[in-house]
Length: 144
Image 1 (cartoon, rainbow, N blue to C red):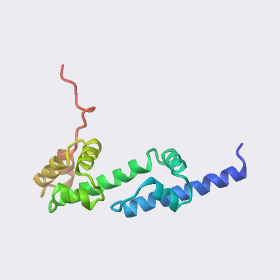
Image 2 (image 1 turned 60 degrees about the horizontal axis):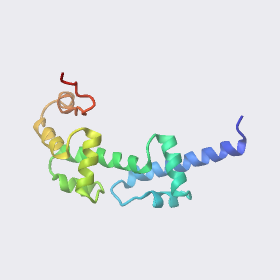
Image 3 (image 1 turned 120 degrees about the horizontal axis):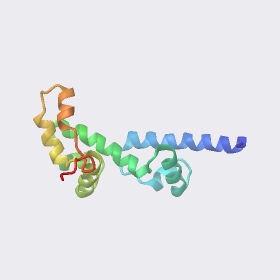
Image 4 (image 1 turned 135 degrees about the vertical axis):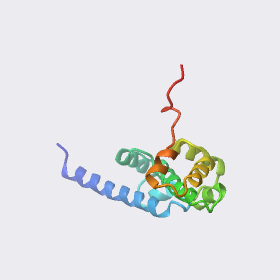
């Protein structure tokens, strides 16, 4: 059985973690680091990282990069920005890191994603979604 002070502390921590998640969602394009996020909710960086992972299943940095990549996908589908412009627009400072992380999460490089998105312009979205669905290497059938 847990004590009331422990329950109250857990609820307080969850509220602070939600504020961190909301800040990442809102300020994803700004320079954010775990130390600054932790200071904003009066937690140590280590405690924030552990509790955030426990609550949301990924680190604050991983969550931030996921938000940035999701936004990058939308910008790349628009087609009016280069991959480099999209990289900086979503808050990444390194094109190499952006491209690597994009490829890890989406399954294709940003330039390939953009090209496929432009090739499907005008298609009904349900068809375009199926045609451009990335196939990650672990999902690719083995050839024997």
